Image (cartoon, rainbow, N blue to C red; front, side):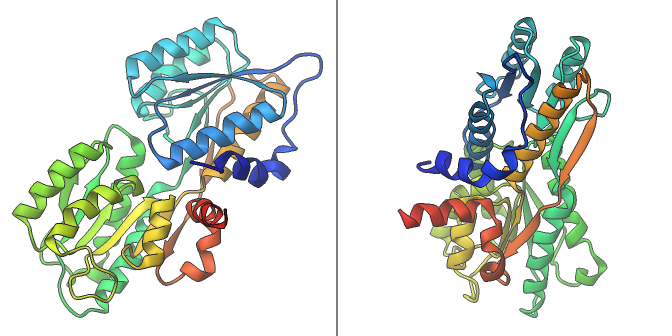
Length: 335
């Protein structure tokens, strides 16, 4: 992702001047993450690590490579190193709770980025997108576009890993929209659920099977933008990867706000995507973590929400610059 570091530092420079370092001692913050496979995680990782280091804070990184047990061991290692704070992108919501309990016992401030704990039985700084509301906004736009076509649709949703609270809330948001009485006459049947487990290969296999069993699927929401290329690979050979307005266009929505989604909305293949602001979320977590350390709070407890919004074919010109993926895409084009 060329140029991302430069963009992140420029985008966050003003807001991050507020991050302070206690006099006389260099802060040491552990940052644990599960992987860097998607644009969202890469952007969040760079925003956090490069900004903190730019403020003179030592960042100790741990990559668990999607291994929950390894992430727990890395958390114990961070505690043993007596770091000043711990920030994590947890493997899932349950692991976030287990790690939080360990950090709380060690009296080390604990922060969670974007993937929330499965319960509130811990004390933590949690920064998360309002996934349910964001998903509902993206799907509502899809429903409105479908209404204009004057026919019934066969809806489907690509579901993430339901051990992840984000996946659960995105699924809930989808149903909030499609189950609105306003759209009760829009559907041929109940939505078809296609499990992805947040794994592109699993999604491809399950989506191919779903399309074979239900070739009339023509209204589709995927719980994450990173799966768009795999969805395209299945729809294109079937003649169903067409732009808005084409008779074979599948009304299509997603969630995250990455570069791929931006490009696909701009070209007319994707109707909408729910946008979570990776840079704002990173800023919120860093500000809250450093403030807690400065105040001597050992177990800060605060939930901070990114309200997000839906970028659509209808508001693209007005709001594309508000989406982090579009900013990165336009920066790449300018080189």
